[in-house]
Length: 331
Ligand SMILES: [Zn+2]
Image 1 (spheres, protein in one colour):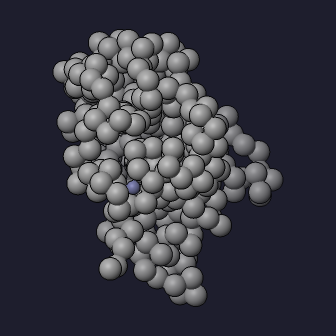
Image 2 (cartoon, helix red, strand yellow):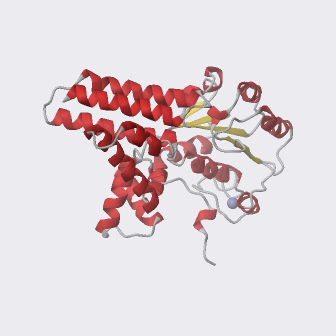
Image 3 (tube, helix red, strand yellow):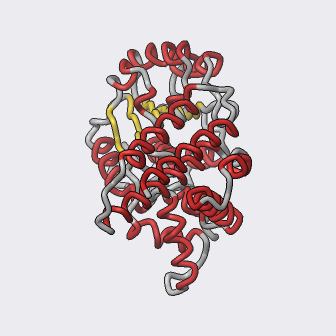
């Protein structure tokens, strides 16, 4: 029988250190009640958490074969998880991406915590992303963190741990997930899109995608797709066009406002850093205006995170005009 590898989530190649640490903790009985999986989005933290859940719940691992380093994928527990119906596993996510995790969802956590294990083993809860917890949901979670119950593992997946209540952070053991090295990410990207490392065109395209994605492999996989690559190319030419005076900031802002805001800001930041780097390499004096533009990008990101009814077109107009001014002041 052919094994469906997607049905048995494994940690990604760039997560082997974290996986080894997790195994060490689990196999020596030192696993904390709560783990905070922290790092930038699209590096595969949620998949890691699901792999941990499978490992903890599998009937062929802890207590049976303590040396097993991953779930078997075949026992009743593994099959139930694959079917998304394991009674000892709970995944809490917002109803829609970007929305809050509300208190109503946390009630299922309370019910889960109050009941006993159905399989007589571990129980695992994953909350993703943890920063989406609104204040009442966060307080409900605090209660669970204080009294998690026996053999219960809570995993909070967070792309912005700074956005969590300090009281929540302090009750979790932090596991960090830094961006991946090209050495580990590139072979995975080739395998994921079924191309060969000797295919120079594919390698160049994916190396660019990985760089544009800030070394986040899952994002790089998206960025490697033609439509997305075209979209980023277009964005870059717009911004460069504004800088050289060929495109008006207003016109560019209109195009930019159709893009996913948060993501396009990261493209902008990358272009900006490249510009600064070129100046340093050319031994040019870094202008205060260009350096200050970093702060403008940070401010725009913060505004985006704190305001729900932001007018993207307006923010893009302001940003692009500031960028033009910073560049002019530099030349
Ligand atoms: Zn199993």
